[in-house]
Length: 194
Image (cartoon, rainbow, N blue to C red; front, side, top):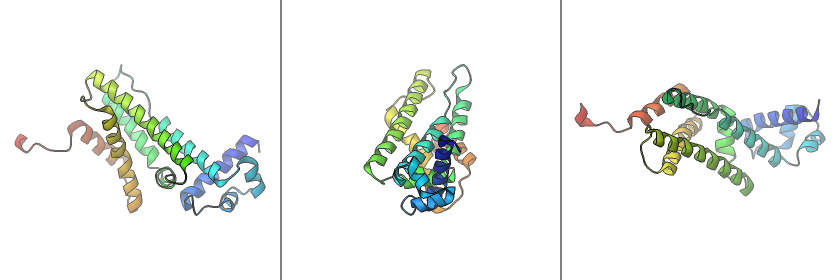
């Protein structure tokens, strides 16, 4: 097997094992057993469990970011936003992504936390840019885009994490529908409008 293919195979196996067992309960022996290679083969490609975990996390982050497509202003914006939300929710509700990216990667060490901070900073920056564009087009209300971006991130991420922690299924289309409704119409009903 070519070296890059072997390396990718080890990363894919490590991803499965970390998702199933968690970072702390996973050992290199678990990874090499999953991929059916010798321990020496693992060390030919990686210096440690931490290094392969880092690559798994970075791969997941790249996959999540890749699903969001730029908005084409020559077409209706709302359906594109809804399609982006749907793809994003599908990506982050994958069992391995929830477990590894949102639960296991937090607090392993300072280097890992730096990577997560960079991921969230990049995600927030993209959301802020989208919100500023929406404000310029008149489809997003004025206000603090930084705070709005954090709120949106929480509205997307937190239902996914809570459903996973509670062991409850989360129909992704329901989440997207509720999120879209909340964004378009707000949360508080006006009792005088009845």
